[in-house]
Image (cartoon, rainbow, N blue to C red; front, side, top):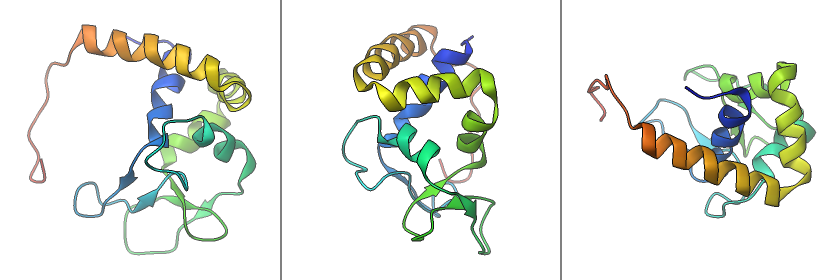
Length: 122
C-alpha cells in the first residue's frame, strides 16, 4: 500500500494530460501546461476557487475561467489535513515533489497491479 505522502505525490501526475469524455466521462485538463511535468497541479489546487461544473457529465470541478478541471478526488487532497500538508509542501518545492514522486512511482512499478478488470472503454 501507499501512505498519505505517496498518494499525494502520485496524484501530482495529474499535472500531465487531460480527461476525455470518451475515455473516462470527465472533460478537460488539470493545468494549463498539460504536456509539462511540474508542481503546478498543487499550486492550482491551493490557489484556485473550484466550483462544481454545471453539465450533463460526471461530477467535477472547474476554475472561474472554465478552462481547467479537478476531480472530486483531487479536491479531497486539500480538504483532508493529512493530505493537505503534502499539497502545500509540493506547491512550494518542485524539487521535493519530483524526488517524492520518483520514489512513489518506483514503488508503484515494483508492486505491480492485480485484480484489474476490463471496461467497455479500455
